[in-house]
Structure formats: C-alpha cells, structure tokens
Length: 116
Length: 112
Image 1 (tube, each protein chain N blue to C red):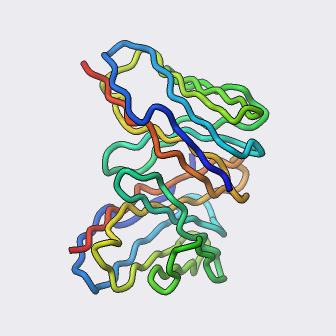
Image 2 (cartoon, helix red, strand yellow):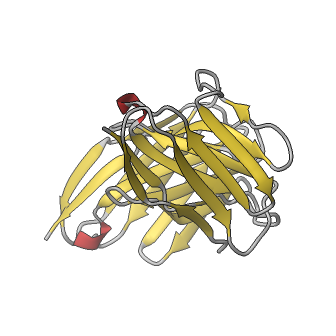
C-alpha cells in the first residue's frame, strides 16, 4: 500500500513554544491531506483538511490561528501547533489518500505531543 | 453528520477464542468501511477495506462483513492470539473525499 510518513513520532515541548509536525506521502502525490487528533480515551477526530496550494479548511471548534497548516508541495503537509499549552497534549495523525485506491485511507505513524 | 459506534468498548478473552467486534454507523450512504488496528502510542494499521458493493472481506484470520442498509459491520477474529491485543477502530467516510469518521474503538486483550 501507499506510504505516509509522519515526523516526529513524539515530542515534548515547553508551554508557549511552537511545534511543527510533518506529514509526507513517500510514493505518491497528495493534493489533499487530513489531520486528526486523539485525546485520551476518545476517538480520532478530524481537525482540518490540508489542500495543496490553498488554505486549509478547519473543522468546527478548531482554531486556525493556533493550528497552522501548510501544504506547500504535493508530498508534504505540515501542522504547526503555535503557543502550545498542556491542553494541546494529544496524539496527532495525518492521512493522505492516493488516487485510484478505491477510497482507502493511509495514515502516518502519528505524533505524540506532550506540552509541559 | 455521520456517527460511528463500536461495541464492546473493551474485551478480554483467552487465547484461541473466536471473537466478534461490532461497528454501527448512522448514515448508510457510504462507499466503503475500513477497519484499523492501533497499538498503544502508535499509529494506525489498516486491516481491511470493504467497498459498499461488497458484503465481506477476508485477510488471514480476520473477516469483516458489511451490511450497509442496516448500518452495521462486524470484524471477526478467529483463533485469537496474544499478539492480537490492541485497539480496533472502525472508520467510514464522512463528507466525501476520503476523510473519515472513527468509532472510539474496541480495546482487545487476549490472555495467554
């Protein structure tokens, strides 16, 4: 299947700092990527849709100024958590859908963010 | 808005047992359904993808069925092994173009 690589797999940062998470499609191009997050004992929830060459679209309740998304190329989307706070500590994971895969979703390895 | 429910939330079985995990969804207008496995602190491993035109898919000891009209899917695991211990997630497309809605998952523990 298609490979989606996410980096880093885990990060610890101080409150008030920013953290960047990368999502790469390794063997295909993705004009659209999706970012999800998962709080403890909750389901994975869609945060935003990253669109190559245009602005991301955010789900209701997700602050676009706090979670900056950049999709500058067909193989890379980045999520930057700005001015991180402990409540942003979560598991973040990206998805990229290759064309011609009959709708199968491929996910990165995920990033465990801990803000202290 | 699509909602996905998974039952049971947790399951503990002795090694060797066959088991069934359940998934239900509210909007039956889906074009596929996917089952994933998530190990603690890790990403998602895709197990099975069922297209809306299919009724079941099999991979090794795993068999997933789909009844679109009733909004249900089941994941059957045969001869469970301790290595099967993980959280199993059901996911269906929502709002088009391959973004998905997940259930909260079933946490499975297989006891040696």
